[in-house]
Image (cartoon, rainbow, N blue to C red):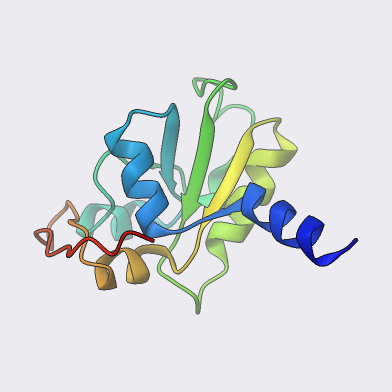
Length: 129
């Protein structure tokens, strides 16, 4: 694999806050999945995200998901690999998946709003990435 192929392949499986925000604004057929515990999700999560803890993912818990959509998994941030575990689980179940780089931490650092008991307002200054 050469450099171009490596980076093109990488972008098939990862996304960042900017691209996720744009995809959500443009209604691009993606579903954001918070793979943390229900308790963590209730405290704070990305707007429109659904919650399916990675440890609970199974045929039964994902049966209502649409396989024509792309699922973006996230967890707390770079110190946590739950988003990777969730992405693996969903991929094994036949779903198209990408992982959000930096998780909820980078989403908030980039100034995007959250929902939940500790919700935050948007402070985004368009970076134009």
